[in-house]
Length: 161
Image 1 (tube, rainbow, N blue to C red):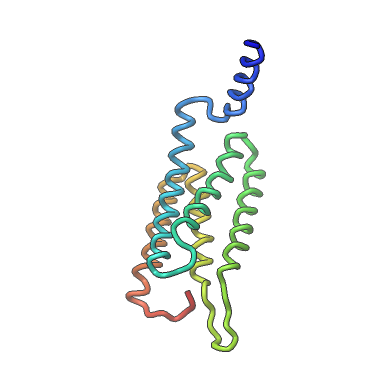
Image 2 (image 1 turned 90 degrees about the vertical axis):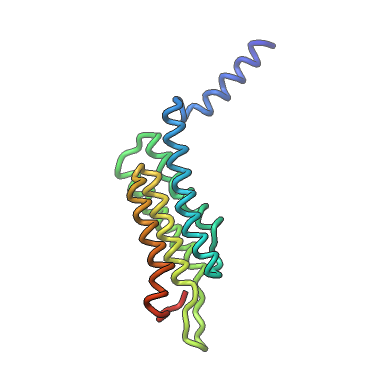
């Protein structure tokens, strides 16, 4: 019976072996947390502006995008394979964003375009964080917040949101 439990414990340990060291655990945790926080900041701005995609949606998009690039890095996949994964994330989030866009033919307005673009950018920020480009991710999030929050105050609305 003892051998049976030992075998199960060994199996469980091997299943969680993708984070073999404390350093690797800290690195992955930091990247995912940065993605979540930056996505959350963009989502908070959108939520406070009364938009449909808010904090949770933006956080999930950013963390998901980060994870999609983290795992292939851990598996030491080629740059070509990682490039295809990034292309897939970009396309997938594009479809997600398309679901937020509504066109009214009667009023000739488009609603949700900025939200869709924000989700797409949030995925890019998540990818940057996941690849270990945290400074680039932070810079992009700051620029996005300026565009989303401050630009409308100095440049009146001329497009759908």
